Length: 494
Image (cartoon, rainbow, N blue to C red):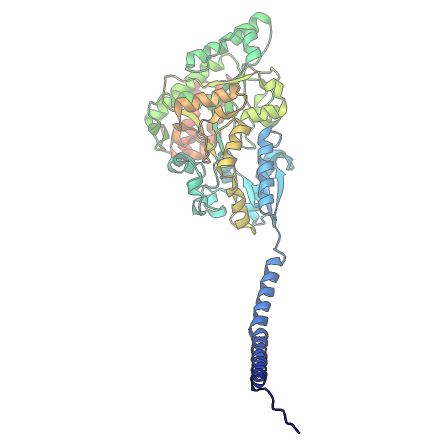
């Protein structure tokens, strides 16, 4: 019998195979343990992260009182900017109510703002706020410093400073508008023109200067209309003005603006004009300028019943040939008129306001149109909304749409020159910008005329001006009334 022995090499190969299998099993076991201990924990963490990112975000609504309804492309500007914000921030929504849509119209919108500040019940997170409106609210609250109590200070908002043109935050006049506070981006810039109806002017035979108009020129224009009316037995009003001081337009705004420009032109230095200290020199200039208004008032230039005219409802009068001139609104009136009647708007021509002497500064400024209420439940979102107005692209859209200036930095500095079809409104903006640059000044209050402590007399002061332009009071009578008002403030004026 033959016994056969196994091949030793085969035995070794079998042992190697067993060892390899054992090693693989060990690795598999270790891998399984690692997976269940560590891999599963990682998966849980990832699942949690996915759950967090997909969790419903709390939806927040920002409520805003809107300006510019019916004002041509300025209305489009606001609507489009809000729409873009919502697109970029889909977890937010914006509830817009236009100021004219409040019960009582624009005055009702202002009253709604006053009411919510008094009661603390915040119905509107972003409010409509311009310098004249600020004064109206200050009077209602009995507090000139109300903004510091109720509104967000945008100088504290990260990144805001770099979005505004440098002179906005360095020039005291803009801070003074809101009693020392920056309440929002300075979206709206303007110059103050004297507008005239070219069709009426041509019919009467008036050749209105577009620059370098003196007081004597203006007096001559008034005289020409008066003579035309006598010769043709017509009664064309010379100057549209309004007694409406609701909604931020002010009282007798045409008269007030003509007075301002003439008064300012008695001073060669803008720094002297901006000085808020009481001044005998300025009081003398007030008396002299009132005498000029008295000369204009001899022609009975205003529309009968002008004190009862609702500015918002009658701002189309000059379009409808119911007056030759108006200064009752700044360069932004283009948008108001274009929203009412684009064709009639084109017969209105803006020109440089009259002055006693050439000076190197002009009437104009910048407005922060909106402000954020400090106690708003969506304050951060509301601030973010207003910051969306501070990009160069938005600034340039404003200039194109409104034919106006903006205090927000943009890539294009020549305001009126970027229109695809420049017209007289673009030309006016460009010419004033080229002539005066940023050396502009405007005020909705009399603090720079009478002194800071008399700021509260603004409405009374404007009423006295209106009486003189209307021929109802002499310059001396109005001046005596102004001194009496000042005397009631401190008892020291003689």
